[in-house]
Image (cartoon, rainbow, N blue to C red; front, side, top):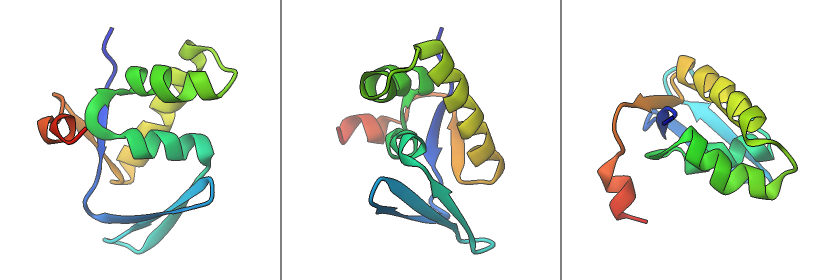
Length: 101
């Protein structure tokens, strides 16, 4: 089963500070802080991979967590960030992201 793909919105500014990422939404100047796990998901969300692939590649090897549990948490995070306009859902892989890797 293929999970949803997301890419970062161009309407935000993000900066890594240690293990966290601080994001500012340009439309309303709202600040968000992502913990280290959410930061991994954020950085990998370039539209080229599904959340399941990001979880299997980045989250499970780094943390002692089952893939199904991590994927459920990643989906909740991505949906919340998408609802705030920080991530954008992608129907198909973003080719430019695939070509730049």
